[in-house]
Length: 144
Image (cartoon, rainbow, N blue to C red):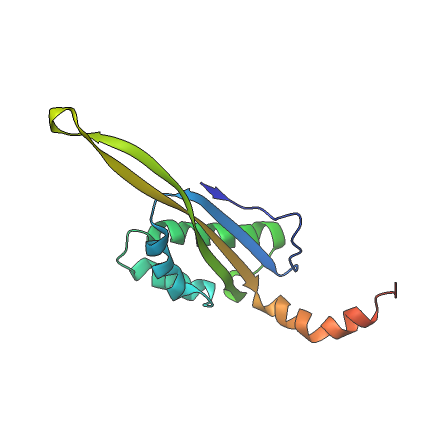
């Protein structure tokens, strides 16, 4: 399940776009192994890295990053060439517990772990302009 949302109590600059994948059926440890490789890289470079990774968890992360870029393109008219991954985090989700029937009426527990992945893309061209003119913007605000 891929969701794109903005938390109400958290202010984000106008240069960021996010996508959240919740209850993804993979271990958080295995997802972190991939997320650590792509954090801080450009969008295009990330897609190339994920296509060549041999891990099963790389395809859902690929889809999530592609979804975040589609949000950036559609909602805020960002150019994909100037996007980079500013924040990528993996949190553990709920564990789905099942019982596997075995011989003589016994059963073995099966624990299927899930994780929540958050990807935040930032437009580097707008963030550089924002950093350059930030002091002018703060000086023009009225005093309280």
